[in-house]
Image (tube, rainbow, N blue to C red; front, side, top):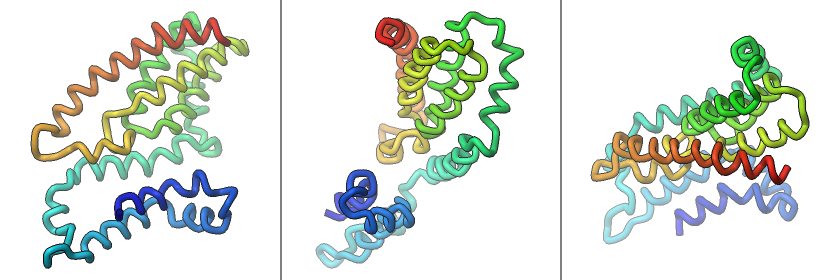
Length: 212
């Protein structure tokens, strides 16, 4: 019940905005951190059989702090990276022009998809999509159909995130001390990353050319 309540208050601003605007505005201000903290407090306070449901000291030792610190650092960097007024994406696009400007468009798309599939496993999907789409606009020929195909490819590539907590919300839930660890999760997910890249270039790219 506590878990479902925390999930509800986390996602409610997305689907209740038109029904309860004041409530969703309040939830947007407190962000997703407060519901999670309240859930932890509730589990530590509520007792079952004379013991708290969540032992804070034991739970803290089981948390992969390295993964959480990494995720927090990446999330903190993501917003300024994607903001137009900061100018990072424009600078990256201008910097790449001399390097890839003379290459065929399909090769440029190939390079950007590789970078996007890689970076989306460390950044959020939205940030990756914004950054690499803006770079693509800077370095690709200004042909509407080509940019539309590129947008489809970069959208799919930016969604292939499973590797780290900063990219995939469930990631911290399956890291642990047993058979599923950060090391072997990284190894197996690298296979997924390679398959995702192949799928985008061999399936999504040709389909986008036919549909767009």
